[in-house]
Every structure is written in structure tokens, then in C-alpha cells.
Length: 347
Image (cartoon, rainbow, N blue to C red; front, side, top):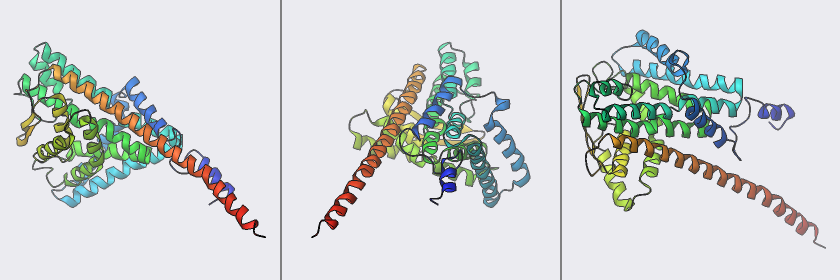
């Protein structure tokens, strides 16, 4: 409504549309990235994602059944909890500040880098036992019998996949929908990590969470893969090859970004993994040599570079839309004035 009350609500802390123009959307997202870069993750006891995980564990104990419909109820409840938390935050802080805080909570690039580089340092020090222990923070596969090359491969695959899960997908959801969108996405991703497995307990119950996570990452995975491969030549043939390799991967998104990282780094990853008694064959991803511990550092550097490129891309897109809107606004009145003059100049 174009009333005084409607305008006041639209300009208020929680009313109106998600801002467009200037740094209305990019600004809060960039602030969230800075929060993650500067301060990283909050302590676990105070982390909202940890609290969400505790709540969903309790819900699972109440609604679990070896059926897809039970899993769908669980997934819908978690989605509503995450999105609802974003709406509450938006009401309390306003859209821009809420988007910045939510993005800072949802993005975990700093933690990803720290854990990956920690394993790399342990591998370079030949401390295989400690490297296996540190790997548990990054992957869900069984690490007890992994050797150095297998641990290296696991870390690089985790960095690649979590470039989407932990950084680029939250950024895109924050840009699109603000705090409710990015916290709903974090809820989806967390539920997938908790129950989206193919073992006997979760094959049916976790189906809805896993499929929703695939859908939520669909765009981000492809944008991130494109940015990863952009500097390489032969783009059409390379893209065809990456897509072909990704089809062998169990994840429609993970295979794509892992293959893109492998080709960009000039290494071969993928293969057979063991997940608590389940065997998963991801096929061969990339061309070149097997990875070595220093390639973990290269993968982290690539993750940071790709995320910076995405931030600049989003800024450029918003600047372009802002310029387009300004051009339309400035040209509109002139056209109206011209018609007005022509209409009243008839003798």
C-alpha cells in the first residue's frame, strides 16, 4: 500500500522488500564474509548451528521410522526452524544487519581452511596418526586405515565440496533471500550431514534431507565449478569431461565441484571410500598425478580465490542492475514530458 503507514513499515527494520540497489544486498553479504574471516566460528556451546543440531537430534528420537514420510516430517520441521530463526533475527535487527549476522554464522570458510591446513601440516611432519584424527573434522569416511595419499585425497575432496556447502551456497542464498534464506540453507545442509546417509538406518529416513540439500546446492555448485575452470583453456571440451566424470559420483553437486578442482589443480582424486561399512565408488576425477600434501595448500588457495571471484561477480551484477534501474528512472520522466508537450502543442 502506498500509504504513510505502508511506507513507514517498508522503511522499518523488518518491513519492506529485501533491498536492491547500491550495496543493499552485497554489503551485508560482504560483512558476513568479513565476520567469518575475522572471527571464525563461535564456541560450540554458543554456536546456533550446534544448538540446531541438538534440537534435530531430539526430534529424530521422537519421529524416527524407517520410512521416507517420517524423514520428510523431520526435514520440514528443520527447514521451518532454520527459516523461522532467520525471520526472528530479521525482525530484531533489520534486514541488512540480520543478513550480515546470518551470513557470518552460516559461512565457515575460515574453519574449513584451518582444519585442512592442520592436516596438511601433520602429513608433512609424517604424523599419520594425528592426521587421521584431524581428518574427522572434515570427512565422514572411515579414516582408521587411511595412508598419507588417501588422507591427502580426502582433504582435497572435502575442501572442494565444502567450498560450495560452506561458502558459495550460503553467499548466494544470502544474496537472494537474506537472513531467512541463508539460515534455512544452513539448516538443510546440517540435516543432510546428520541423516543424509546411505546406510541402513538413514537410507529412507534421510532421503528427503539429502534430496533437498541436492536441490539447494544445484545452482551454487555449477557457478562455483564454472569459476574454478574459467582460467583453463578448451572450456567446452573440459566442461564436457568434467560433467562426464561427475556422473560417476554419488552426489550430483559434489562430483561436479570435485572434478573441477581436480582439473584446475592438475591432479587425480576420487576412487573408493568406506563409510562405516558402506563402500562408495566415486570414479576417477581429474587428470595428472596423484595429490601430495602440498596440494592441500593449493586447494585452500584455490577455494579462497574462487570465493573472491564470486564476491566480485555478485558486486558487478548488482552494480549493473543498479545502473540499469537508474537509467530507466532518469529516462522515464523525459519520455512523459515529451508526450505531454506534443499533446498540448496541437493548434
